[in-house]
Structure formats: structure tokens, C-alpha cells
Image 1 (cartoon, rainbow, N blue to C red):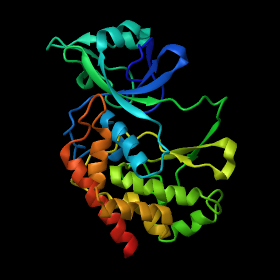
Image 2: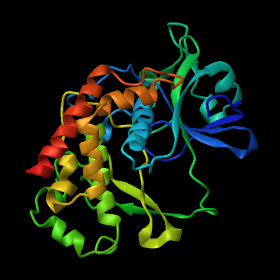
Image 3: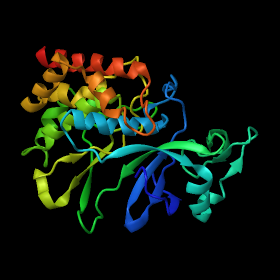
Image 4: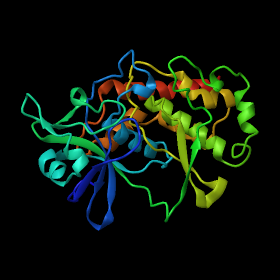
Length: 306
């Protein structure tokens, strides 16, 4: 994904924000999220979680974090520095081409079409035509490995005023435990792992998740779409831990891993920094995000001990 020539680019349909489908030789594909904001751009205080910016560097950091935690449920993601003229504009489909323009600063820009931030005032611009982005490997085709999409039981309401049931029902987890596929097997424990992972990254946007159909209820949950993570380094959103807090459960293996990371010899932030230092667009994260990781790891362990 870093070195192969790009043959064709088109905007991915669906979703609320801009993404590109990138095609390489030999039918290799990747999902690209372009850089839109600097590393130190935080979630705006008046933005709801469902209108937050998507950050390309969050996708890169989430992949490395998933691997360090030992989950290995996220698709590989890497950064890449592009020439917009030769690697996007010259190989783009007609619909995307219509959104290209030259900015007043003489930079090559485009914006695509989507629900949020796809307009001239939120354009993606090169410098003058250099642009970095995250490139995520594609999952196998549905014909090769069919998948099922599940509504997350702790999904947020995605409404400006309304709360979700889990936010008001003290016995919500008891109800979830009685409903397939959460009444047996590994699924509920996988969601506990996911809540830990999302809390560390600060991702509140976990509305659905996917599994491989072929393995039935023995499959693991896929960790996909982390663009809204790493947006608030100075705020720890405890509601992300609601599955773990309400069910009072976590895998022994996960607890052991978290304790190992907390006790060293290297901190979680140090391991993540070292893991990402060879990425083509390194440094990946703003420094306060590393401090937040170690702080949040301690919070998870304190909650479990309590």
C-alpha cells in the first residue's frame, strides 16, 4: 500500500465523511482517508461525537495499538505521502474530478460528496499538491469470506437530545446477556475488549461491528473504522467503558495484558511510539495523546480493581 503504483481512485459510497477506494495492480485495493487537519486539531467543544472530524492518523495509530494489545482484530493500516496530481487527479473517476479546484493559495484541492465536510470550505488541499493519508487493507471479498454486520448493544442514540437505553437502564447488561449471540460463547467478552480498545483511543463512534459468518458464534469481532478516535487527549470519556462497567466482566487474558503494559518495562505510550516510528508519515500522534493512553490504561485497571 505504500509503494505500489495507484491505478484508479474513486470516492467510496456511504458513510458520513469522505473516503477513497484505491486500486493497485493485481486487484489489490485499499481504503484511503486523506489528511484534513493538523495533528494537534482537537474535537471542537460543541461538536457531537457523530459530527466529529475523521482523522487519518487515528486509523494508523489504532491499528498499531490493536496489535500491541494482542487483539489483532484490525486490518493493517499505513500512512503514505501522495502527489495529488499524478496519484489522484490523473487516475480519478469523473464524479471525483468534478470537485477539484485550485485554491487562492495555489494549492490543488478537492472535496468529494458526503454528509459532513464535503464542500469548498472543508476541502482537502495539497501543499501545493502533496498530501498524506491513511491506507487500510481491504478485507477479503464477501464471496471469499462473508461477513455479518451487527448493531452494537451499547450503540449511542446519535441524537442531539435523546439518550440510548443503556444510559438510563441500570439492568441493561442483564437483558443483553439473555439475547443471542451474547448469551453464550465469546461474543460478549469480545465487546468488553472492544470497549477497552475504544476507551484508550477515545472513540465514541462504535454503532455497529462485523464478524465472519463462516465461524458462527465462535468468530471474533472485527475492529474497523477508527477515524473518530484520538480527538480529545485531555478528556477521558468513561461512558465508552459502559459495557465493561455494567457487565462487570473482562477476560483474564486482557487484564493480564493491561497489567503487563502498565508495569513495564516499557509504557503503552512508549511501545506505540516505537511501533509507529517507521511509518511513512511519522510522527503519527500529537504528544498529549501518548500521555492520555497511559492515563486511560491506569483508569481501566483502577475500575477493575475496584
